[in-house]
Amino acid sequence: MRSAPAQPTAAQRAAAFGGALVLRALFATLRLRIHDPHGFLENPPVGPVIYAFWHNRILAITAAFLRCYPRGRRGVLVLTSASKDGMWLGQLAAHLGMGSVRGSSSRRGATAMRELLERVAQGFDIAITPDGPRGPRYELGSGLVYLAQKAAMPVLPCHARFHGVLRLKTWDRFAIPLPFARLEVTVGPALRVPPDAADFEAERKKIESVLRAEAD
Image (cartoon, one colour):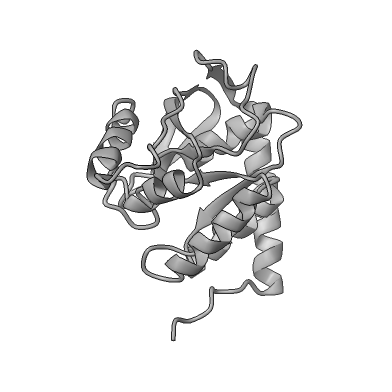
């Protein structure tokens, strides 16, 4: 029997709240430029979408979300791991205006997928880092392809370029924008996985190549 997701203590919840305040203060200093050449922000689709971006760009995309997430949409849920790291990320997401679903390919994967499909049916957008939670860096897992096909959701690749950043010595070289740095976020064209597509590997490689094209 798989263990339940790690749950936060009162002290950890307080720490996550403080961390979210620090991040909001950092994000407020960033000189953020959004590129939306395909008009998603001006004319978003009626139904839910999947935002896909690499794990090391979590902070950049979150900063953009807080500035320009289209009004009137149901909200965004992030897929986090069932581990302690995923617990911290879920708590931070909650204080930054997002919900979370706990699970990964190694823990609670099927349960998380069912919950995601239920929340999609309620109208929520989904944010996924397809090389998380432990990599390999810039390799897209098959779960995103399965969800996009099963729920008939378009995938919006989100890219970020940094002009002033601290890179951590982690598996993904996690990027923390420096205060007052310039940050460029681009929303790519919507990608769809055909409902009758049998070659998951071809669909996976197609989405991965789009995301890798803007990676550093």
